[in-house]
Length: 261
Length: 203
Image (cartoon, rainbow over all chains, first blue to last red; front, side):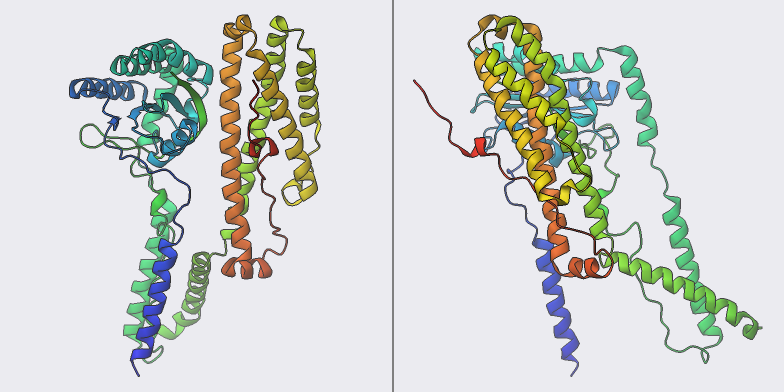
């Protein structure tokens, strides 16, 4: 007798699990792990060069609040570099959610392709034409002679130069950073939960006072705002000092330029 | 004393019960259709925005190419005419649910894409033009814009897919019948003919 609700519950649970696994996306590349500001999956850099580049990129973020990540890929998995680039940028969420100020420098040595993928917020500064100039001027000549480390270093330097070139504009851009980083308390949520909790206390107090008046009205727990949309949380905005590095939910719309050698 | 409190407290608990019922409905997806509708509209604006950006780049490009390759007047006029046509297409407010208007818009933009492609192919024959800084900048901007158009279209396709699926599958279908009877399925892009055709190779 008692087994019927149990079985029903199990079926429901199975359904929920199915729904949860269900929307596995179709044609998406296998993304590399975001292990730091330099993700050298194609092994083009020595450990020293990696550390040096990492420090450069960190200095750039401290100065301008922009996140620049260098990625080398052993394979584009059959995608064009433009296709791979914006999806990788969105997947990692480079740049902050408020400002979309991330940049990816992608090198795919086996396909002989390079791309600067620019987050939406930086498109007016690091324009397509500027990205192309950096690629054609600083990177491709070195890549053609096999000097990957040099090309990547100069490319990153070129991007940094563009991003920090206009001092007035940079100051304006950095100013907004601290406001954006302050965790704001959502008062609506706080008030909502306070009211609910007070209500529960009041209801239980009342039912204990006059249990004859109302019988069996146990409070039901329901999800409210602030629940269930953890995928959109802003907790991971930017990176803080040492420790790990992570994106802040920045978005990419296809800005930047590509080149091949 | 309790007797005095009762009518008042009953009203309060009724109000709270209503609030909680409202939240439960939100959990059931009563808001999903309008949410997806807004997302689709936003992606559509992005598509229009990027097409506009392309149209804005063209006069400058045409002028630059003219300076070096004025004998290619056929290709140049083709681009100018296709641009004029694409920017003149009237967009009715119901374009997203109106298959004819949507197709007209798409055809005009595809025609412009084709004409632009031919123009850029022709420029390959002019080394002076290809080393012109202004032209190189324009070309990279145009490439970037085409890339943005591709991404905007893809985002729009996903948004419409989610929305159309929602209004045709079960909880959404009921909500639509009860609350949003005017939520129509939206039009989606079809792949342009040029891109499905294999490229010709000439020797």
